[in-house]
Image (tube, rainbow over all chains, first blue to last red; front, side):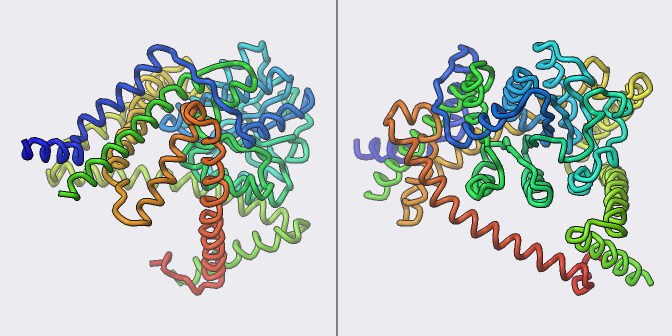
Length: 276
Length: 210
């Protein structure tokens, strides 16, 4: 009997990782398959981002920078679509650009999808500049003239042939930059464009990056911060257009509960085996 | 000569970029623009160097029949697939990444699922690692454990349902405790970057030449 008890606590103390993987898999897949949606509380950082875009006038021009690739797509793509929906609803013009080459197709797809929903016309309401290597160099020089690096758009069409671009030359003509970030480019926007050109910036970042981006929000260097899938879900709630952010949030919520349960169980097992 | 030329280039370009930050007028402003365009062009070529290096590595592995050499076959399959499909797509349209192109089809059906799967594996590893690592062995480990549990539960809707004040506590941990530590790290990194940049521009740091 004592032997059995010891075996049980030993088992609790070192559960096979296969079981953990299985349970995590189930709690993530089920809410997505069932289409469950969780109600989220709006955080001040996401509300600031929303209010920043809400304060824009129609015909204002914003830049959306796609600095992520398919690995971060589940977190950042819902953000992109929610922001685009908000911007197009307010008749704000959108310029998309890309610093991660593999982000170009997903950015383009998201832009085209939402633009079609709102009946927006390419060249008049939105333009896709595509990818250029040189990140910081491109960011800095766009403050002088966008055409220094982007003479043509992603389809090799001269920028000046697009009506919305005729009066857009540098950051003076840009109301806001929205950086969707899976790497360090968000910092670069703040350090090289925010500080030098006094440009207003909103960042959307992956969950793991939120911690290191918060100081920029608190210091007022960025106007708003959308952090991870939760941020995307909050933004979808604010614009009242539920999407994958809210569905994914249910999965994330259950996964967090499962992980905390494993931590508690592990500690119970640890103390019970140590007592012996 | 081999060392002096790079040192002079580093000094001149670094000097131009710094000066033009404070004096963006002629001649520094246009000089900075030229420098930045050159930087972008050179960066484009570094992508080619990366491809060259990767191909050489895999050729070497296949020749020497190193352990796991057959993974190189997978690499070359993907490499030539992208190369051929990419060239065909560029011949047909200026933007091969445009939805509807053959390149985009490969990107969407192969690369997106592969990259997403790799990143999704993180959830499983995090769960397993949290279970094993978050044990209340010492006071410090216990504090870390409590903070992790509060943030993990407090930042999802379940936390609010459990206790309405939990998200507020999680935000406090995030905005006060975490932020203080993070700010210290960031200031340290920034000071280090400034010092290293000055060493590079002034030619004191020369390890990049070797």
